[in-house]
Length: 168
Image (cartoon, rainbow, N blue to C red):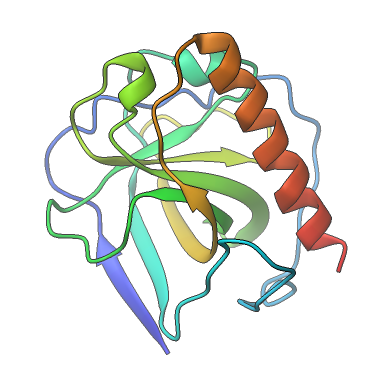
């Protein structure tokens, strides 16, 4: 079962996934389902949450950190806890693995809740394009970091966790 949530109609104020530092690669639909892997705070929902909408422009902080993101506005009442998720992204009928952060980016002065998705093995321009982001498994809660370097190191660690889960 899945719950599809249309992105909020307001401008998300974000969108960093342009021609970045990714290679090319695609995954067939249905390759990675939602499942419980390992121990820790990871959780899966009995109902897959899907956020759909157009990618919006923003501050491009993800790109500066080496993890460009495609960002979608989310409804204020999106019934999902903030944090980092293993995700799958549909773009023009092709599927890609990724990791998404749902929240308001407290480490970099963010205030508006949004969904930011770093898409693995993807380098095309996405501004204005329609995305379908499936949030499959929560990796950790969102939290505030003291420095941008700490945030960057944690994002790299999160990507390692998601990559390891994809190999299982």
